[in-house]
Length: 200
Image 1 (cartoon, one colour):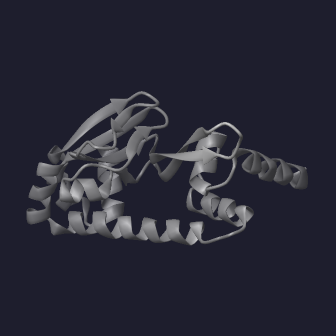
Image 2 (cartoon, rainbow, N blue to C red):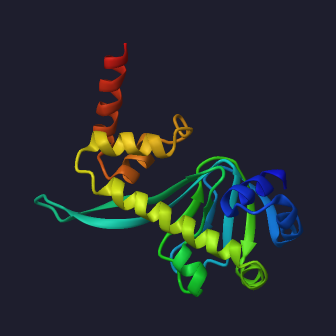
């Protein structure tokens, strides 16, 4: 639980002596890569703190393809990518206990600490700092996401992403990172190749 304690200390800015009694409310778990933790329509009954590994939330959209034959393209849109030290759930589904809109999955083997909704309510009452930290962190990350999406230049979005997540290089596939940046995978590959040529 050392990783969880470190993460909670950073997130809440509370002394570890106050956080140690709260650790039993979190259930440790390990997962394999590509483990589905939540699907649309289900109610998010847990919030997952990430001790190690990377997770993402995404949704699927269908688009009509312009051609002589009616076709539909299925695309995954990655809403959130969260590395170790963060947490993830479908926050609206979790807070209001309503059906989720997102899939939540692990991108690699993860060490997670699951906080159930019932335990969240207990901590919200006894230690409101935990709930406030979850809310504040979600708002900050959402604001950064909006800032990144507002950048029209794909290169600028890529640079902002790398500043936000400097340790994720090599942990994400081209397709997943491209879907998060809202660009085509070939565009992302081209940007990476151009950078490699400029650095050589």
